[in-house]
Length: 306
Image 1 (cartoon, rainbow, N blue to C red):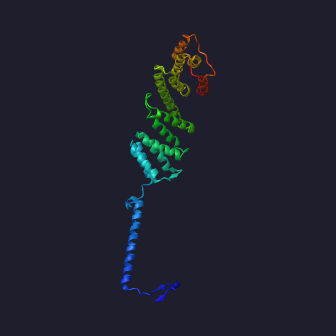
Image 2 (image 1 turned 90 degrees about the vertical axis):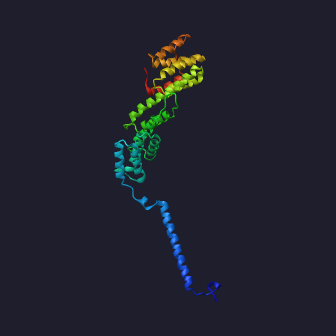
Image 3 (image 1 turned 120 degrees about the vertical axis):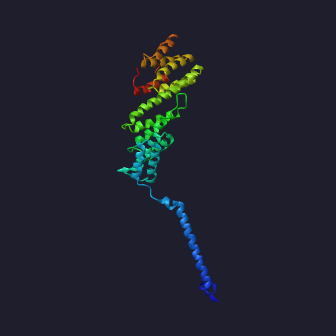
């Protein structure tokens, strides 16, 4: 026996050949296990060696996608453009901004393919990440048109119509000089006209059933929010009818006065005037009326209608 360092009781034992062989085999086994673990870990992050092969160059992917787009293979082009954006997310050199432009064109290709949800997702991703860049107007246009093309008839839900107007308004306000701005104006007018038609349809439904207050609320929306549409004349005349039915004659006179001032040759004004005359009344605008205030608040921007 011998006293080991630190005052502990130790025993000096000479290693045998057998024990040395076991240690060698143990070290070999541990090494094999560690090697297998490293290989498995690499596989879990990168898959097999074939999957680690580099993607095609960005310019080659972009050219292929552009060719597909030109041939009308919109789904194929969209997928290929997304490959560019996915594999080269930082290839936004000012000279060749492959990733950024590819995302905008992927949105456009999805739209042309009728894949509206994918077009909206790609377009919004672009506008969120690259606001103010060259292709931002295109991305906004794609999103707006994807909603616009899904608009329902006047008797159906108008969610897509409202979303289209919202997106066109953003496009017109933020990029007034883009080539898409004029088209946005035209599309917005059509969308507003559809919203007004929907409000009129519901308003007439309530009026026929003598539910005048909800009818007035619908016609009020047309007069205050959709003054530039063709439905505003009828809406004013319907307000005259509803207010007369309720005995609220000053509001009826105000609606008729606004109708006559802005649309003097309208057949709707003739009907409104005749209705007032049947009760011994004349069109007369009350400047304190909600209708007078609401109309005059926005009519300056729209111009006189005659």
